[in-house]
Image (cartoon, rainbow, N blue to C red; front, side, top):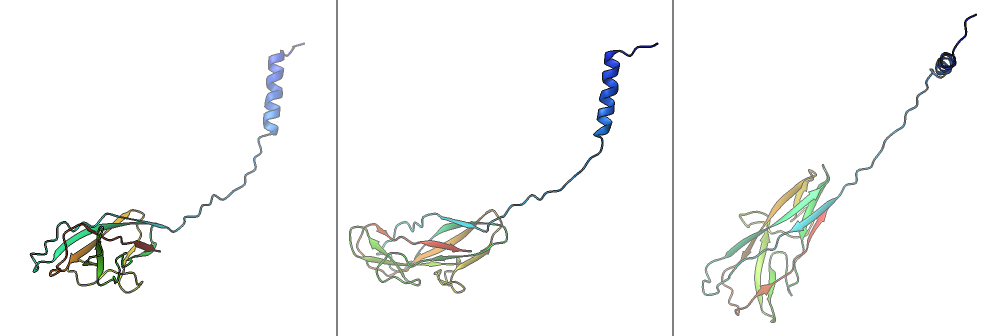
Length: 165
């Protein structure tokens, strides 16, 4: 009579057990996420440089950059408030002399031709765009009108840029 070794017997039992578990079953599950629409805005300072009242015939031009970063395909608008100068409007903003009350008028525009004032009325005088997921630069063009006779000093204003999406 032939005897079966323990290791052979164990192998046979292991194969019998493995074949008992060879059937499978599967299920599915979903993987989800929500992409929120959003925008952030940054701005560089607008420095006109030196305004010389003695050259009363020359406007002083300058520019700065607003950068909008919005989710892909999100429409947005960027508007500017009138600043902090007393009596200012979108068409005529006012820088105040630091330490004084004198005003230096200036305006901010949407394009280099300086024809369309940049304000804060949606659908009227704002910058519009469509998000790409990347930073998009928008140039703000400024002008200090010639002919202002003001005292020497540093003049400043603070303008708030708001992005609506």
